[in-house]
Amino acid sequence: MHTRFVVDAMLGSIARKLRLFGFDTLYYSDIEDSHILSICMSEDRTLVTLDEDLHHKACKHGIKSILVSTHSDDTDAIVCILKALDIDGIEFNASNSRCPSCNSSLEQVDKESLKGSIHDSTLMLYSNFYICRGCSKIYWEGSHVKRLRMFVEEVNRRLVG
Image: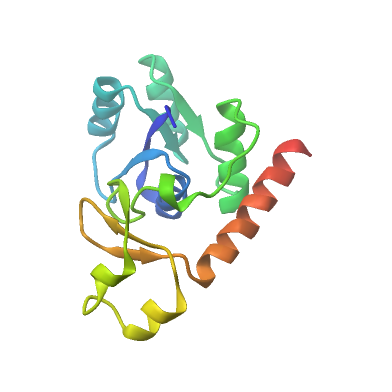
């Protein structure tokens, strides 16, 4: 993914989803608007915000900005972002995901190397495991992936509809 984002404080769930879909996404829960704009300018990042004033400031400074409706659910918000970027569909591929917590890249690891790090029952139930290169959090393709794939289907349906 080439588009990189800064997501404002009111859209933490959206930031995590964008990371799961492979987008390099910065998220701050407490940061001044001027600092957000500075990051967007210096790192060529697109702002995603609910704040109309911040959106207008960004546009005034030549910063790419996507204004998400305050009435949007996560699906509508992701659809809005993708439409603004002329992206006609997404997919979930854990190998291309970023850590939903810290935004670092994930590395697939052999489950044998995780013995002692996570419950044995988890190692027995699942096959694909990933570790974050930044925070070392361990992820696996569990039941949440099924819900995420359903989310992707709904986003893609709304993109074409």
